[in-house]
Image 1 (cartoon, one colour):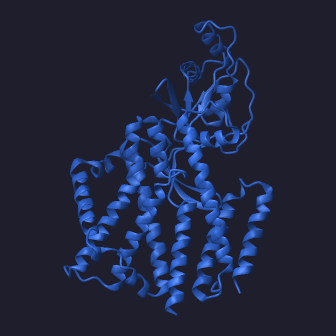
Image 2 (tube, each protein chain N blue to C red; image 1 turned 135 degrees about the vertical axis):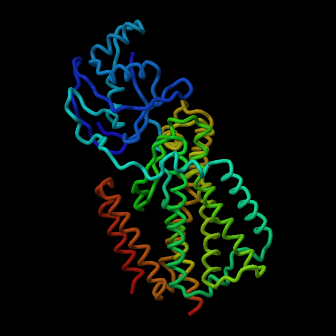
Image 3 (cartoon, rainbow over the protein chains, first blue to last red; image 1 turned 45 degrees about the vertical axis):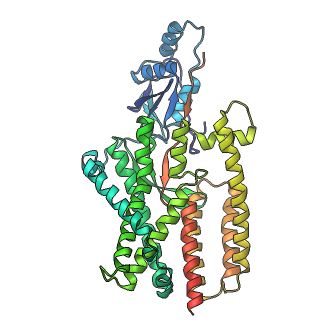
Length: 396
Length: 39
């Protein structure tokens, strides 16, 4: 059986088997129940009979007896339990069968207590803190109304290109880590287990925060964790804008490097917030939209709809799928145009451009390695070959 | 009666997605262009 992340879990279950589950958490979501464990691979949506079956299994009731109990309760001839067992296995929620631990299942080793506990992050979400944030936002907005406090592109351009490059990458990484830390802190504040992990999108390595535990809190509370990243970005940008305003009005004297860093911070945050609003990628905006629509699998449902076009999907999924298709086509056209422009660039051999392309290629290479384990064989050949071709064309 | 379950979406907010890597590459390109112009 192939699970959501491509692992194969093999096991035999008979009526006398005892299926040991991880200590899962349960939350009601409309007419279904959500169960899961942070160390598991995914959370599951269960109907009430499925929850009863899982509860009985959790009490170490043999599979055959679980079937008998449910058949008696629901007055039905036969209970088919295999689909539920397969999903529990795939989700990584089965610890052992008949006392035999399963290979490839998540382990519940004792781990260090987290640095960000609910108690430690609580002050960040207290009423006084919210008031301070509101004042900083207001200050940033006021500064934004004065063009003299806007990011200074002339100062950015005046710096040494290598220095500006290092500064840009450093700021981008710092802002990204801070963004994820805000998600993590908000989740911990809500009492949800969350963690950082190294993942990847296509061939690109990514640092991501696993917030799947948010399924265990009511939908309106999830917005806090989704919005915390962007809110923290805007907070930083507001502080930078206020500092630029103070500089512009000679209340403080900043060096060229300081103005450059502040200007880059505002620009990076502005571009990042716009991107996070793209609901057709798995951004913060996407998860907020999915929560607002009450979808537990919005992107997957939309893609399934585009592949098969069944009428079972609700209207909002079909509308989202249409938007997804349009945006994908537009992005595809831009991407091809960009690649053609890069390949045709006459200055691709200049020193800075070579460095930039080298950095990009290194990033791509890391991503290829990260992706390799899950990539179909033909792509394992195409990716390095494409990279080699790209380097051969661009580098002298 | 078939007892089944449906997986729900993994909620993972990536810090450096392909789009953010694109921003990084765009910033690199911008700096390269600035460097080219200043030389």
